[in-house]
Length: 405
Ligand SMILES: [Zn+2]
Image (cartoon, rainbow, N blue to C red; front, side, top):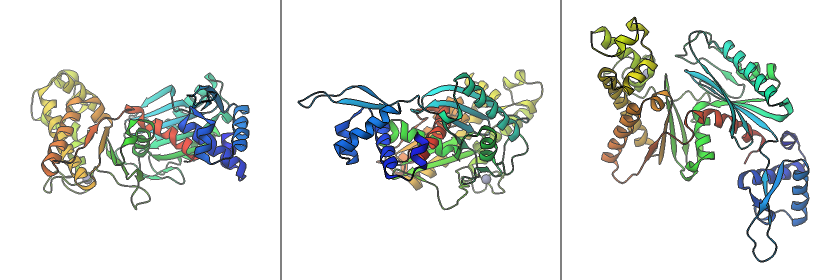
């Protein structure tokens, strides 16, 4: 029925969709308030509400406050009439969430990425888990509204193609038609956007962060991805591919060579590969660390080893992380200088796995901001939705298609 709203050209279906959208957004809501919002005549509104009730898309959710007469009936959408899948494809894991229409989590699956997790392996994982979850919940294709993907880039969003992401641990990441691959195998519509954008939209649309109009979201892991909401709108820039981020902002003009060919980029100091490389170099120089007991060969040191060592207070790893975070904080202060956001959300494995990294970046950026703009208040935190923000936002992409504002 929701799909019918979108495909239909009839005015009645459009009005029905608008009414449903208002109940979705403002429910529990009374008929009087719906008439106020939509401008519909009372008889039309009653008829359309009855139609939504008969299709079990909404239900009567109790009574509101009386303004003199009888207490008004309140309406809410039925969240279990349809379902959506949200997928997060990052460089360290792929995550799949099954959600109801309120984007409440029903089931979660996760695949860590390594040298063997090629795009084909990831697609096979997604197809098998989606099929399995649908069978377990007895969901037919008709009951799944769609599959949303928040992905690393660059992307051709219109055609759903993952172009040529760098720094992915496995081979074969060139022109992956992921939308086509999933649609052909599952027979369900797929929608795709940048993961940092879906995470940002989820935090903005679904949490108390809708009080802010200027937000920057940074996901820092193997790469550094940046999303922006400016004046309440998601900002994409002029590059259709959206090949931008904060990773290659130069913070040290005579600095280290970066993978992009330039020198002194944020990426060269504070990305996961840069952090791992620095720790390995220091161990090779003979510096002491508990990591020597954890790996048989120095080259085997992995980011997870470093996180654990930092959280156990290892001095060598802690110093490397503090230095990396200082550079990341300088980069972030440059972002603040240009954009003056009210809120910055920091996500991704570097921020979620290490308190020291997060706190150092935050302290550095706030300190620089205080010097430049003593009266500009800025909030920096790790968001309300945590690691699931990207996949929840991916589910929201599907809803946005069928129920546009
Ligand atoms: Zn660079």
